Length: 105
Ligand SMILES: [Zn+2]
Image 1: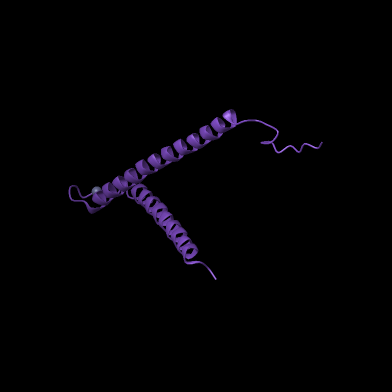
Image 2: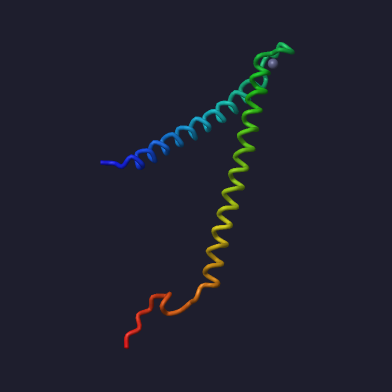
């Protein structure tokens, strides 16, 4: 029998995967729409296709700038974790006990 917190974690993971998939397909279909309708027969101002292309471009630009921020944050976190690991390994005592060497005597 599963714990309630474990069930909530699985539900959160499923929701996160579905949100990522929805975001991915939204960006993908927006890009396809922009590429497909780029050379449409424009009726001039108030063209609904041009308005939709502008909305798709704004959406893709907004998402891509957000992804860059997330990428930079993850990169900074990885560098900080690696620096901490190096700092700890440099200044930790390197003794036989810490290396778990068995002393038989
Ligand atoms: Zn147009």
